[in-house]
Length: 255
Image 1 (cartoon, rainbow, N blue to C red):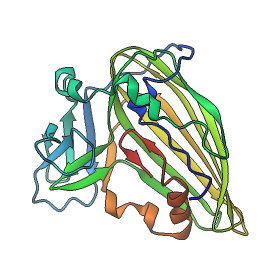
Image 2 (tube, helix red, strand yellow; image 1 turned 180 degrees about the vertical axis):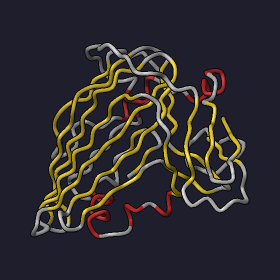
Image 3 (tube, helix red, strand yellow; image 1 turned 90 degrees about the vertical axis):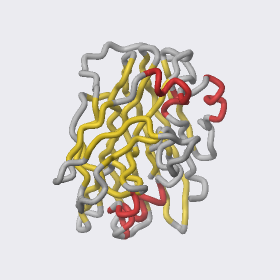
Image 4 (cartoon, rainbow, N blue to C red; image 1 turned 30 degrees about the vertical axis):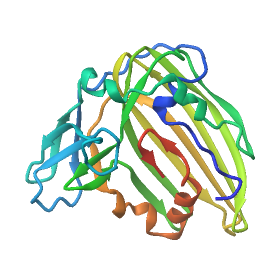
């Protein structure tokens, strides 16, 4: 990436950023992460959430939640207690690292409770291998790609994440347009934040447009794939989307 470098703060940091307008919420809050590990081959029988996402397990990055894996790779992992995640809640000062005025970008992300703190889970660990719940669907004929995923956010206060950022830049002769929007009321406690992205390349490969949105949703079963086996790295269109979203970080979710 050249000018199209949008660095969104961690969602946890965004929750400590600027103020906005609150909105009502009616979604059901999660108590577990329920899912299935794709192509599970047995052997390792535990799936774990680490304190610092996909980093290696260590004394400074302990397991904060774990669950047994069934023979078909399914699991139900209880979300950790507030006492467990308190040492890892984002501090308000972390929002100072947020970059909203990158060259080629305009817009603003808002938060209705700037004194809230938060913690996010979007990666799990199986036998030392990081897994994410990001899935993709590509159409080579139409030159489009759809990306879906999500993360579990703990918020210490009710708040609403909103606003949008638009960026335009170029890399390797390709004009890249990235549009990011938030419409996510959060309740006190755990919330499921759903990510959806649509990417499309022009027929002459001169333009790549990506629309990325984040909304709060009812908790749902998810499919988990090894980060190294993500289909985002397989075909040319997916690779282009990967490059364009390479510096977008929402919680532990990386593209």
